[in-house]
Image (cartoon, rainbow over all chains, first blue to last red):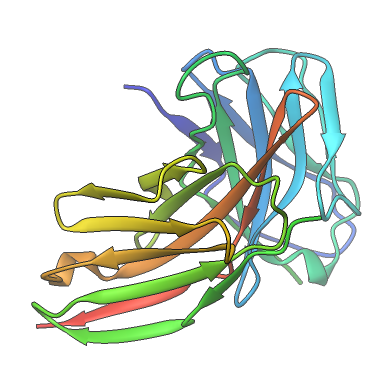
Length: 116
Length: 114
């Protein structure tokens, strides 16, 4: 089954304790992104990756890191989490440029993060 | 950058009635406008989309209209059913440097009352 998976689905942690949220897709997609969803603000892009070893900042990158060592995986790293990073996080993937429908994004099920 | 505004933030309708959600965007370079449905506990899922060279698109009970001049697009759901209850997001996409940048609206929580 074609899908985007995220782990963990729920996480409660404390300020300053490094954490990683994993994301994996099995559709051979080139593009992957991380979003955070907050009430009244919709989905805001944190980081994105156009291909392996190619990543760039989205609209709200502060406090986050990413890596793209393999095409299928795109982990989100919070080196020193703070309470303002409490949010619902989504990973998404899509085909690369030149393929139709190249701009449909497939979202993972989400990770609910609480930073105390 | 692009700014996408979505209204209303909440919408409550009776089963069988129609529901309309509206979005506006600011950047005329936006060329693709998808709508996503997010059910409780799940990630957003594409339900319908429209490209900038098309004015209207319909898929069974849902339709999307686009007015490029006014920079607004709308989602129309007819004969609503309780399973239509969800949060709906609009988005505008700009393609620059071979990358499609998504700009999402703030979401509309639709409640269909039986």
